[in-house]
Length: 192
Image 1 (cartoon, one colour):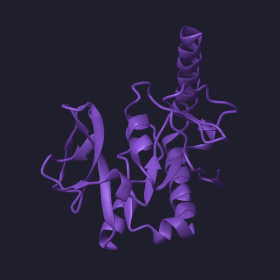
Image 2: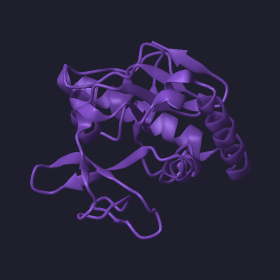
Image 3: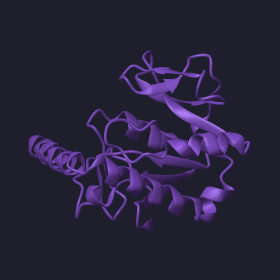
């Protein structure tokens, strides 16, 4: 049973990753701009005082311009930083993206170690990357489970960020997998 579930997840990762990789850079850029504009219309987003962003890598939907906007607006802006000792992601506050980021353990830009830690249960809004999502809030990540651990510890609104091509009929899940509260795509805001 476990092996077949892992095989289902692996196959879905491959299918969705290929679908997103086939999107043109122009399409991804325009869709990312549409998604950011739609996010800025949401009352929960506008009210959020502390936000956990992610640094987009590869073909992920690009929310990065909002990081600078929220810092300028005086909000608490945090990014995940992988802690080798605990093998978990922590949230660290970023006040200056040009001087406080470094390449992290998995090659993803992360806050430097001297950036202030933000308690995960203090975050109002968490932007969540992933490979695929379904309309029940189930998320398929990259397969290591680190983001599931992070999501299990937060109390704020968890919002999946995805291209429409990443929305699938059903994501296979295991007991440790964490759901999200809403999904943002370039064309939809879905409350769950």
